[in-house]
Length: 327
Image 1 (cartoon, one colour):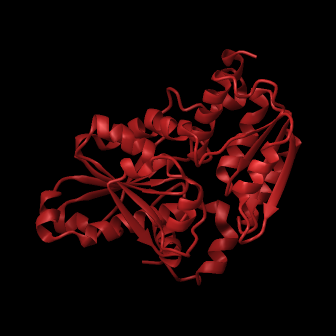
Image 2 (spheres, rainbow, N blue to C red):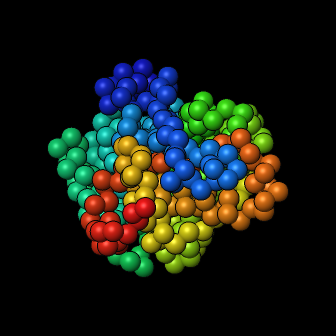
Image 3 (cartoon, helix red, strand yellow):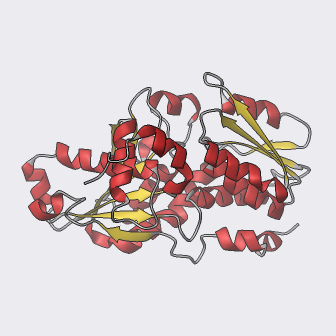
């Protein structure tokens, strides 16, 4: 198999970020941006899904193309991926183009049923096995065990530098295309740390005055698609700390409430990790003194929206009352 054959596969062609402006900018009104009137700081939601189902498509394809180029897939027929949902979805969609006959997805039992259902439905496209591990067990350790089988190979987004490089190559330029020289901060929810690290790496080279805010849940709390400090430390080896200027931690409920507020203005409707990033950005701006805010007058701040809120319908209903998150 040649790289050209992979790139010409219809699913790969659809999910390939090369030559596509997949990041869309949505300017928030004063109803969602309290700093617009007071300091003329514009805030933008950067919607990175729509062209693609979610931003993990960018990283998954980048990692898989690097591994194919390096001969990692030679003699392999099954790819194993630990994931909270989106990376697994992307790998299952892309795997046939790389010649894989089977995908093993390892997920934690608390992954939303809607996410697991979306992945399981793809068994019509490839031999698919979904393995669940209970709370307290490690999906990553189980995936490593599975990948030790003959003909199996592991795709580990938490350690694979191709994750970072894909976002440096595509997501970073997509953000700067909209924000240009006015960008002061971009807030990015962290799970593997790959998006924040990749965008941060790009901005350090192209716009060093702009800072990445890495946003994650408070210790012990869970927001789908992200990891708190302890859970990041367990598995993540990507050098995100070198690329992220400030880390902000936000509670789970606030993330869901913020997500629902965003639905008032943002279409497509973003998910809970988008609410986490938005609330983290607001919290950081609130922490600044008036002199620092004045220095930002006329600047732009942004937060990344990685995926669609419709993936989390049962979580939203269980997390919030009908009126919570309303303006």
